[in-house]
Each structure stands twice: as C-alpha cells, then as structure tokens.
Length: 571
Image 1 (cartoon, rainbow, N blue to C red):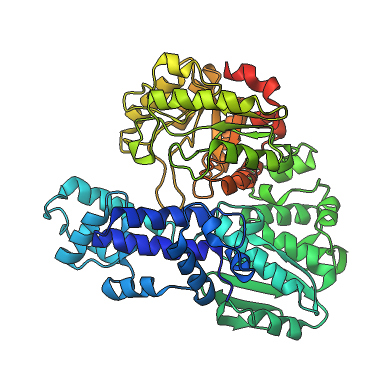
Image 2: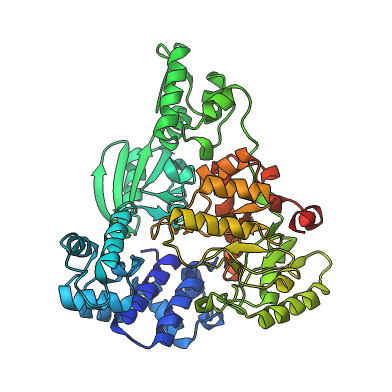
C-alpha cells in the first residue's frame, strides 16, 4: 500500500491530538505537530527516502525517535503508539478538536461528563441543551458549538486539492505502467483545480479493456471494488476516496474528457449551444445526425462549436462559453510567470528554516525576491517578534542581501490587525519594512460591522500594502469570519492596497469568486505561499490554480513583475 507524506503527518497529528486530550507533555505534543507540518510540506516522498536509506534525522525537527516512527509508518501504514491511544480513547474524539470553541480540556470534559465521543454526539447534546450546564461552557459556547458542527457537515467527504494530487499522481504513474493502457488522464473537479475534491475521475483508452481493469483493481491502495462493468470501474481507496475509471474508445477520448471535466452548468451550456447549431454532444462526441464531427480531441470539439479552447479551470458555467465565442477569454496566469513570493516564515517565529536557508530555496526555484514575514509580537503563540527582534532581523536581512546580485530578501512582517483596527507595531518600525502585509489572527467572532470596520481602518494606514488571507477561512476546518468584503475591497482600491491569494492548500484565500471580483474592481493581487518551511515555497502552484479559476492574467498579479518594477507600489 502506498504511504504518502500526508499519511505520516496524519498519524503524527492524531497522536498529538490524543496526547493533547490526555493532558500529556506539551513539548512532546508540539514535537509531533511540528514534525507533521514539516512532513506534509516536504516536497520529497518519504517512502523513497526510507527505501534509499537516507538519514531522516537530517530533516528539520526530526530526531531519532521520530525518524524511527516515520520508518514504521512507511512500512506498516500506522504506528503502535497510535493504536495504543486509540484503545484508550474513542476514534472520533480527535475530530472534536476541529470545532473552534473546543480545546483539549473541554473535549476531555465532554467525554468524561456526557460521554460525547464524536461530532454526531456533540451536535445531539448541543441540540438537547446538555452542554450549557457544564462548568466552563454556558449558552453562548453551546450555540457556537452547534453552529460549528453544522458547518462541519459541509466538509464531509471533501479532500484538499494537494492531498488528492498526490493520490492522482501515484495512480497515473501506476496505470501508465500497464501494457494495455494507451492514454490515461484525470478529469472531474480535480482537473478544474477546485480547492476541495469529492472523488477522482480517471479516463483511459486501452488495447484490452479487461486487462486494464484487472490491473486497476489490483492497485495496492484499493480497499473495496464498489462496482465493475465493462467500461467503468469504481473503487474505494483505503483513505475512503472513491476513484472511477472509465475506459473509452480513442475516437471518444476528447469528448469524454470534456464531459467528465466540466461542471454541470458548463456542460448544460455546451449542450444548448450544440442544439442551437443542429448538433448533439455527449461523452462520445459531437454529432450532426449520426455523423461524428469531433470526439478524439477537446480543442476540436470547441472549434466545431465556434469557440476558442476553454482551459479546464474556467469550466464552471460563469460566462466562459460566451467569452470563448467572442474571442475574449483571458490569457491565464502561469506558474512560470511568478517572480517572487510575498509571505514566508523563519525559525524566528513559527517557521522551520533560517533566513539563509529560505533564501537558498527561493533562489533554487528561480525566484528573484522573497519577503520574510514572521509574525508580529501580538501573536505570541506563533513566536511573534518583539520590535527589537524585528529590528535585528531587518539588520540581518540587509547583511545577507549584500551577498546577492540576482536576488533580494524583502524586509517584511505579517503584522497583526488588533481588535480596534490599529497595527501591532509603531510607525517607526513599519517605515523600515519593504513590504507591510496585515492580517487578522484573533477576535474572529466580531460582528460583521465591527470586523469590517477593523480591517478598513488597518488598510487606511499609509504603510499597509496588502491584506493577508482576507477572509480568514481554513478549508475543511472553519468558514470565513463575518465581513463585508465588497466594502473592504473598495477601501483597498482607494488606499492602493492589494489583496492576497494565500496558496496554502488549507486556505486558498481569496477564493476564486472573490478574486475574480477583485480583478473586476481593478484591484491588484499577490500570490503568496505563506511558507513555513522551504518545501512550502512550491505551494505557489496552488495559488496560481486559484488565480486561474478567477480568470486572472499576469498583469493582475504583482509578483509576476520584477521588484524594481513594483517597489513603488509598496512605498
């Protein structure tokens, strides 16, 4: 069974969750969580490192004990320590920690006092007004819990794009090694690069369909064969993801790829256009009467319909067909056009690498500049920098920049917006920074009016350059805080501030709809990785995917330009 980096990280995170609930040593808990973060963002396959005998203790934050645990997980898919904890506590208990109002102590209280062992129990207890009577909870907390459990239902059976990507890559590699498989490609919402994916759609052509099907169901990560027919096979993987493989004829491959990639609205619009032209379109091809006009190639189908080719990320039924018909589709931004990154964190706050290490990693992937944005001192939990610490870091950045002739570290900081809208540093500190991004990291539960006023006040500070992860959401974890985003965008435009598309896969904030609205208003955007280790710098592609779904072109994104060409924006 393939064991991915994210699988190892999941085991470590679950161990940390159980230890947290038990009230174990906080330093041990933190070690597991930091290791999980490092491994999930590594950029290399742990399984290959173990197989080649590499020393895992060379990885940041991985000592001998954790290295041995990683090897065990890679070889067995789990670890005895996790099994021991699962015997001690119910398996659904760690899920309660994903509810904003609940920390480990409260989860333990709910378990001990009300025998709440999972999210369903929690929602039932909140509905029956059993939680408010517990010491340390109250009616307000109970209401918050009930709202959060309902919110969690939206995330059931949805997987983050980066988690699905590693599964798809492995599946495609596997199927391409089958002698009967001629072509294979992923379709569905994954190909449209949606931020979360419900299941995986694969399309293939094969010289021997039965042999290709046998090969597919023999994939070692298959838990169950859900259904098997001559042309379609559905399986469930061990991580519960469902994968559908459709084997189609070569002359229909493009039509099937088009049909199974597009959203329902996009496909409805395509069918309507075909009907108006006296044609019909389905997963087998585009037809006039019984004659196939196109089918083997997607682009040929669009051409027959009188349209330019529509990139998969745009196939959402949001006006793309009209734009394609008029020759007005955007020239979507490409990852290769990104010249720098405006968010990264070092060991000075909650990152895993030093200034020099991050600079080396950024230069290696071709960046011309990298902003160092450790947290400001209000965020003590993330090791925020005091004013003196930030001054020393800026001096160190100046010294390092003297060594570069083709690269620049930018002095910056992810400055906290305090509850009243003021910023976490005094003017004289902000004046020294090359780039001033601001962010909300606290008081998420303010009313829409107060939260909006808070952020607008921050954007009116003359030193502020852009708003970081503007809505505060975390995918599959929490929704956005309550704000009038349209009002915030208007203020950003007035104050010549940009908005960020945060490329962390669990954020992707702004979302595609809001980022497109920002473009329509004339706002500039930045795509930042929010890197907490060197491997995270590769996350830039997820931000670009999001930008493409938002119809963004390179001119819409500041960091497609050289620093010399945009530094005036940040003055």
